Image 1 (cartoon, protein in one colour):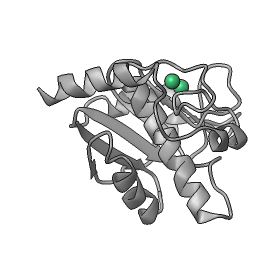
Image 2 (cartoon, rainbow, N blue to C red):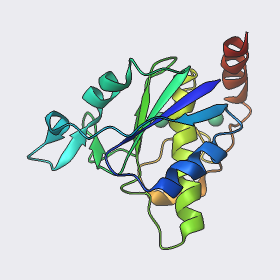
Image 3 (tube, rainbow, N blue to C red):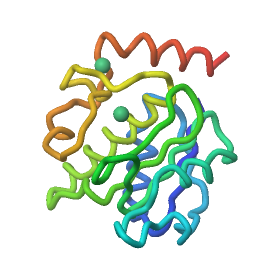
Length: 169
Ligand SMILES: [Zn+2]
Ligand SMILES: [Zn+2]
């Protein structure tokens, strides 16, 4: 599939380049021009960005799937923060690198790859998975991110494969 990566605000260039590489198993990723984070998306009380309007802003971007990437802190619904949000089956996804950073750069890269694959996995029809090792397991802490792998488990793989095949034809 063709994945468009849309940087929102300042995102380190090497993070974006690593993502293109790390998403290879899912498809060919292209980096779109960076867009500013819109102040309308910012919740002044919480000092965080709302994920929903960001998803809407990404809906018209080209590509089979679009992944917005930001260093801004995101939230949605009742969560304190989220690593990302992806719509099930279609449409855009957005992720934040705000909570994923580690002094160990390799670890940071791995976490960002996992959460990017997770959100794109949603857009390919996979739900959150109860298998803690599966990339589709829900994470609300970096420990949970570190515990899971970047692979889809046996339950999730057919869903992903089915959609990837459909996008190919
Ligand atoms: Zn999820
Ligand atoms: Zn799974």
